[in-house]
Image 1 (cartoon, rainbow, N blue to C red):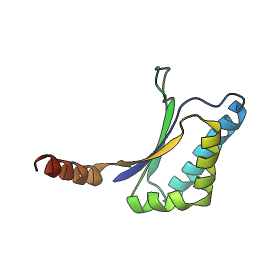
Image 2: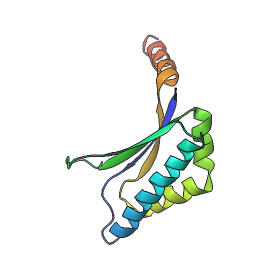
Image 3: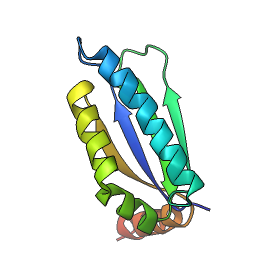
Length: 116
């Protein structure tokens, strides 16, 4: 089971770049599907949000081991996709997330810190 994730987040598409962004979204999902089939990541899940008054319209959660995700961040195609997304979407970002064992370790560390 995955103990880490990358969360790719974005707000709205930059006006005039809608077609580029739509194409990139499809290319990214195809790429993540290939990574999953090849065993380079455990899974991925795209999520779109209803209008909510926030700066967040969607995310893609990519799950895997910390080593898998570290390697992914260095792949040229991943770098290309994230750089294009930064150009095409407002507030695009990639966030490290902690799941399962990593989550438990982080919470144990937090409990230790607040008890000092």
